[in-house]
Amino acid sequence: MSKKKPGTPSSTIALNKKAKHEYHIEERFEAGMVLLGWEVKSLRAGKAQITDAYVLLKDGEAFLLGGHFQPLTAASTHVIADPTRTRKLLLHAKELAKLIGETSQAGQTCVPLALYWKKNKVKCEIALVKGKKLFDKRATEKERDWNRQKQRILRDGNA
Image (tube, rainbow, N blue to C red):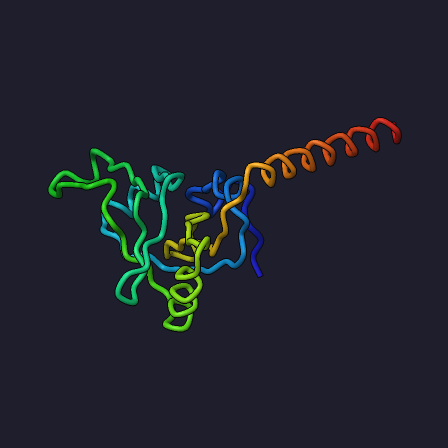
């Protein structure tokens, strides 16, 4: 097996850091995306944002809404580029059925967590999530601060 070269860029295109703060992540799925040529070029340049995006499940299909792929001026000269168009997500029928069944329950939704390259394909990691309450967010923040403080104490104690 060949090792990764040190100068090789990360396969991650865009992350939705806000989702981990706003939601409890229950289950993750990997979905393919139907993209146009200019969108792929834009993703190669790292011009994607999925912070406010969400997944819409309609008619037995999944769609990514609210994702913003900034068009490159050189790549999309002959096409009128719509950076916020609805993009279809490709999932297996069983995964779609599970997502549709779970999101029909109250309090559950589906959000994108990350866009990344897998070989030469763009994949979208989507998650089945449940919204956090304010006290949950505070507890998570308090736990993160405590873990950081523990690491400092251990590091200073060993030195």
